[in-house]
Figure 1 (tube, rainbow over the protein chains, first blue to last red):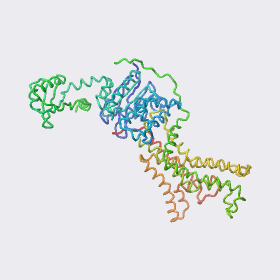
Figure 2: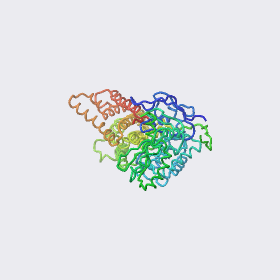
Figure 3: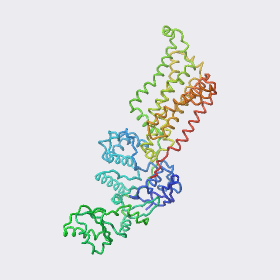
Figure 4: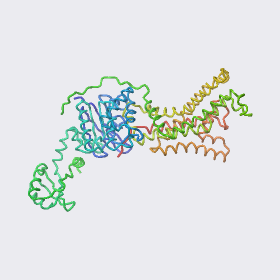
Length: 308
Length: 289
């Protein structure tokens, strides 16, 4: 499959601050997840590939064409920024039509596209309200609407699920998958692993401006499995639960705390551990308030990868 | 790898560029300005000098009918280069132009900086020069209504009321001066407004700055002039610089004994400074966390 987006030795400095360092990659059609903690360089990377900032070194090409200063190319890209970018005193409708009028659409086309996009993100009923009165989720959906209203081939979404309620999140995820089915190229950035997991298996991991890992999302999962998983259980009798698990070979370590009703297990085999827990809880009649995995997040994966 | 239902289709069409890509930016600026109630009031007031001078043109051709009102100073109502210079360099008009800039121009760039809108603009097929042009055109729209339109209207009214082309025969250069000076003063104010607007994300702060720079440049000139009695201090005042250049454009002797070209250079320097600052300030949002 041909690469839609290509970067070669892409680097960006903000004065002495390194934004992105020597990133060479190819992004193909479909959904690609860009993962990284805050400050990893995700937004910088997205702004570089949308031609908003000039690379310090290297270059970006979309469909073989250099992006920097290639204004006609921008008509094929839809960009949803992370931060809010609205005039509060405008209505949703005015916002959409004013941005669509920057393309070569006729007046009627601008209006029909704005209508369609607002309908798509279910803001059609609120289109005449001032953006000032929109909730965080509505603003997020409006940002998404402006990114897709001109029917771009390449859609760049910077943290599009931030601030959305579960229903809206589901809708946006469905929407992104629809674009994938339509043969478009979508890049979605996020620092929340499950969000990306729900969207795609192809990911790029960024850390401190560098690519840490690329490929299938299960690679990351496997990586977690090579390290003991931490599972915290908050229950009525943590010591009893611990004593019943102390002889289990998959349990490597048991720690009490941080609270008096919490016990933290370290296990090599998470699936087996989760298979044991329900039976023990029932057998010993222990009331369980909460089971969490403190290291089952992106930050923990990064920590493992960078060898912290 | 998931196989998509529809393969990737390379875009084969030709991108049609807008003829005036800056126009949507201008239209938005005008629309947002008229959304402010106080702006509508000030803009209406700012048209009063043009209405008064238009009345003056009419009266100048009907002096006999209005003798009972004039009782002597009919010379003031003569439509000649002095009349045009008086209109274009009058303190009330310049002050109202600054007020228009405060209300309609202060937010032009500062609101985009505040609301992070630049990243939305520049991820679209819009060049930075088109963006700046669009913002400038907003200023041009308002200021040319106060300068060029009335200026040409005075000429037209004079010809209509006089019923002859004698005025044009006497002063054939007047329409050219009207156009040139209107464009010059509007261009200066456009650069001045965008320069100050790009300095902050707070519209209120920009509004105050726009107003204070204009007023205090005049105040400082007054202070230094009264101490040192040196007319060259008029170069410190934006208002005096415009008046000096205006006098030259309408072939009148300048108010202060300073070559008008110096004032012109001061205004040009401010425009250059503005262009330099705009080039640095208007760019894709840079992310440093």
